Length: 228
Figure 1 (cartoon, rainbow, N blue to C red):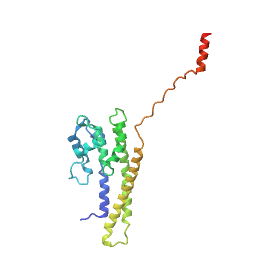
Figure 2: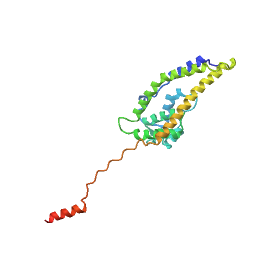
Figure 3: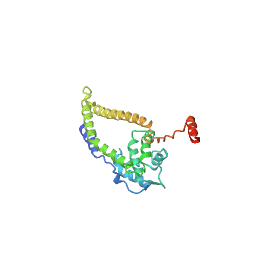
Figure 4: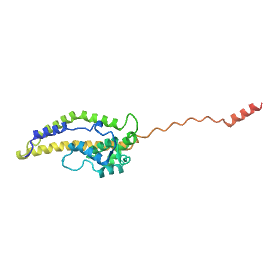
C-alpha cells in the first residue's frame, strides 16, 4: 500500500513536530562509564533513527575512535562527563553529513577553549544557545517543505497518468536532496575557512620598552662633570 502525496506531506510535517532535544538538565550530573553513556544516548536518540530496531545509536568502538581521533577528550578514569555527552550529541548529528575529519576541525577549537574550562561560559552554554537557534528554525523549515511539495505537485503535467505520482515524489525528493547538497557545500566551505584560523590563539604580550642607554658622548660629558 502506497502513501498518497498529501498523506506523505502530513507525515513529514508530523515527524518534524516530534523532533525532541536533549536538554542539559536531562543529562546525569555525574560521570558515567561507557555502558551508561551508550545506554543514555540510545534511550534519548532512538526516536531519531530511520529503523528503531537497528543496533546501538553509538557503540563503544565508535566512542573510542572519537577519542582517538581527538573529536572528544579522553575519559578520566574510564568515566565520561556531562560535557563529553554534549560533544557526542553534536557528533551524532554531524556524522550524517560530515566526514570525521571535518567534525574534528569543527569541534577542536570549541573543545580546546570551552571543555572543562571552569568558566561561567562553557560548553554547556554553547550547547544551550545552539539548541535554541535550532528550535527557532522549525517553523521556517516546515514552510519550506510545504513550498517544495506544492512545486513538485505541479510538475510532470505531460507525463503518463500511471507514472505522475511517482515522478512528483521523485521531484520532491530531488528538491530536498539539492537543498541538503548545497548546504553541505556551504558547511564544508566554512569549515575549511575556520581551519585556517586558530581561534584559541591569544595575542602576544607587548614587550615593555627598555630604558635608553646613554650614548658614548653623553657618558663622557657626565664623567667630566663628576670630575669637576
